[in-house]
Image (cartoon, rainbow, N blue to C red):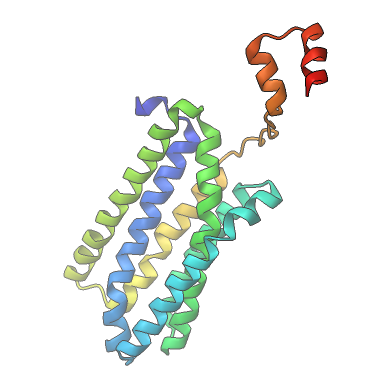
Amino acid sequence: MLRSLPLTVWLIGIISLVNDSGSELLYPLIPIYLSSVLMAGPRAMGLIEGVAESTESILKLFSGVIVDRFHRFKPWFVFGYGIAGVGRPLIAFITSWPMLLVIRFADRVGKELRTSPRDALLASSVPPERHGLAFGFHRAMDNAGAVVGPITAAFLLSRGVALRDLFLWSAIPAAICIMLAVLIREEKPALAQHPAPLFRQYVDSAGITADDRLGVQGIG
């Protein structure tokens, strides 16, 4: 059954797997990095995550509207992953927590800019009766990434990889995500189909003839 899914669904699923692996590779380690390397306390951590989560929540209101207005999905999809891909490795070079705040802010902006076009690409790649399979497959791949990331981080740390170097390793999944996102083919969006007026729906469902319509309209 999964083999019958189109290439676009598979690519988006793999992208989510790789991206979430890279994300979960790093973000559980940020509190340790913040306190041991950047010498910042819990207040800084609370501010950083508060701004990040607030940004994500606010952009949920606008991201879909912005994408619909431009009638293009792929450019926003690639751009969203590009922001995260560039930002995460830069954490290895920052020297203060405000710079980490900027990177987290940019990462959440990228996440919301890519979420709506990603869902639109999934929906347009399969017929309506297969939406459940496509979105379920994507969610499974995304959740698998949340498992692979921490396991990879634990393995690298056990091999003696420095904490700062882990952020440089995140450039590899970022590059893979961007390359796969570029390969996605965007289908031409279908024209919106407006429903018929209620009067016409009633007439058609009742089987009223053209002669009868004049009588019905006259009564109205």
